[in-house]
Picture 1: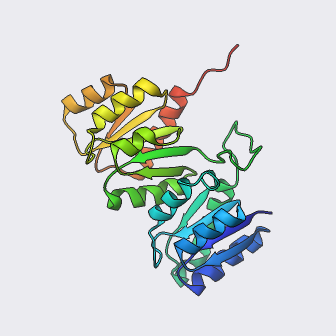
Picture 2: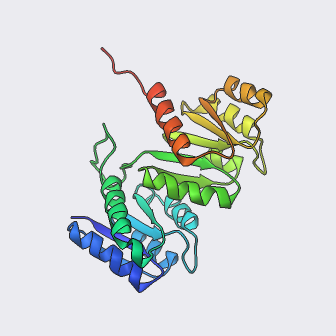
Length: 241
């Protein structure tokens, strides 16, 4: 049985989440604000946090950033829950049940031996546009990825290690190509560039600097996830014979 902290806007949403969790044998504490949920996560060490995309005080991305910035909550998996139209309750319940099961299940080859170990692949998203970052965080969470979001190149270079980096080129402080160059000097981490720059020259330079793939905006979530999985397979260390 898992202990879950949830930040939800309405009583109806709370009832839905509570029913889904109870059906799976989990207990939960539900709060109406992101700030309260983060405080409870810091104090109570939950197994999972569920948040709505837009809360009264914080966006989902802000809650994620607040939790990832604290060592005690950085490894807790997060599920971002969407809207709850009454007509879609069976579909939403099934979707939430699947997301919770995925978030609480360690990725292949990973043993959850301690609370501080990451139960899902952690991705660093470097994107200065919140209107792009927030839906990506939401979407990737549905595919079982935990996302750390930063909005500047400097923050990307000082961020904790991640399994993969999704890197926008048009950053406000450091050009994304330079961020990629510096990451390659210090870390052996897969990098996928996400950018509105679709010129062949930019693609070639990015790949020559060490990017593992290059995806031009706009792109679909399914294509991004497929590319992330493909890059992960290519860059996964080969077991010694």
